[in-house]
View 1 (cartoon, rainbow, N blue to C red):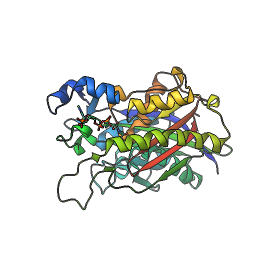
View 2 (view 1 turned 90 degrees about the vertical axis):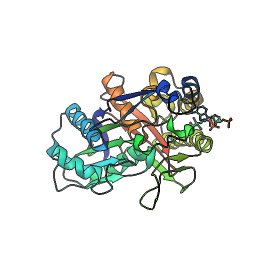
View 3 (view 1 turned 135 degrees about the vertical axis):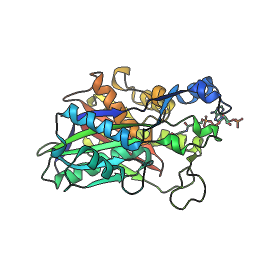
View 4 (view 1 turned 45 degrees about the vertical axis):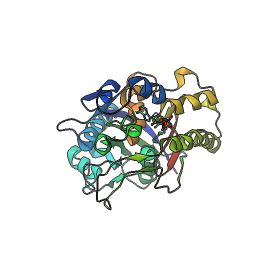
Length: 316
Ligand code: COA
């Protein structure tokens, strides 16, 4: 199988800034508690006129521009999300229309919660191998503020809205991203009701149990990706972790002795943006010049489902 590389990245960031101090007015919490337990200081929420669709379109446009690719060259479009504006049409179908992507390509949403973007990269690699067009659009976009239970201080402080996108290219002879991924069905630990619900569609989570799952899943994924690719920690230029809790990232960094210049945290600004978190990191790293042509990244995600995944991906 021919592999994919990232050609360009972009992001869509909603306008409304919400600080921990703002949340102190809503629930019994404190800036100190939130920052010390999670690393989060602010998050962005969708305001008037903003939605998964508008954020996804902004991110995708920026990624296309960064890649220097026209919409007519895209061979498939995947939006990873658990909070699409409508179940049907999917966010990806709406993006097809908004960006004027070709009509003879697959455009669909993918829900693997916070691991969605990595599931999307793997799926895109498979699709582009069977497509005459060699570029694909993978977007992670969320409007989680709509799913927050403001009576649950254990979860309402964690989540934010946003979108990130990557244009990927598939070429003969390029190595596969060799993604590893998995899931085990667990409805109790992290739950968002769907069509079956009679009440509100809110996020509920057993935070401590999910935390325990995450601190085991991250090193497991790192080890599996390195093993599958015959690589060592030193062969990786940059580690990109899902931004769910700064402490989860810190534990992995300590375990693998990753130097500060080889990993990144933006959870302080955005909170947990689920499927958008990894592409948001990619887009900021790219803008800051920390990654670019030739960079080899090891990305790891984990989340509701429960799902987990990792891959090794290069910049074209
Ligand atoms: N402000 C103040 N106190 C809070 C609070 C808040 N926002 N939320 C919970 N507390 C209190 C609890 O009521 C509890 O009080 P008690 O001891 O008197 O009962 C205490 O803080 C500890 O609560 P607990 O839920 O055990 O905290 P924690 O250390 O596990 O941290 C999370 C909570 C959510 C930050 C943490 O579990 C976490 O990050 N989990 C993983 C999240 C994650 O990765 N989710 C997404 C996967 S993609």
